[in-house]
Image (cartoon, rainbow, N blue to C red):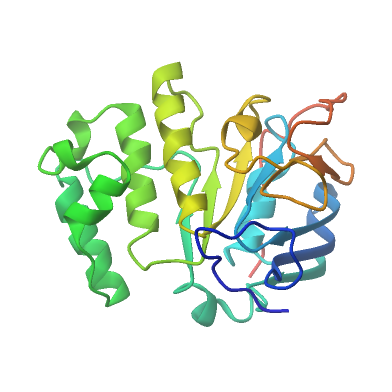
Length: 262
């Protein structure tokens, strides 16, 4: 399947125009004897905010890095925008935007300069003022990165993820450690991405975050304008609407991840 960006007046769930952006079947990632990801199955539809929920050490970042093409999988099937993210990363990277966990940037560059740098790396044209306004950071366009607050750092990360005008955005725990006001502000930015028709894959360990990133009024499993997925340690995910689900009983978190062999 392939996916396209939805128009602002379209909602996920209508098969007439929605196809799968991400398809994952029986995904497994091993680090020696350690099963960091164990049998994950999920499908993400075009234009939805898809929340991947679980405690620290549940394998959320490992899973999202596999989807981004940063790590090879041990077994299972993965398709992102119709592509294998590990073997077809050159085709995929121009179509996705990424905010890694613990996003950091050069301390003595400004947001305006950061966007200009990313535009050169992607060989695209980008309007720094437009992107910074989109994430509510235009008033800090010429301030050094190291003078910005934690929430402003994350907003810059979103702006940089949008430089190449991606169809799909991966946001790995973007609000972790932020004050409540900064979290609410970033939720508004995520809702705006949805209104633009972009697909968002959001990882979080906050129970309230999936619902606060919702934009559509529908919440059934067939009308998934926003969904929540719960990931427990060493068990498959459970899928349901964003206003349902339970935390479960996660096992001990993983403290170390051995480096992948060549």
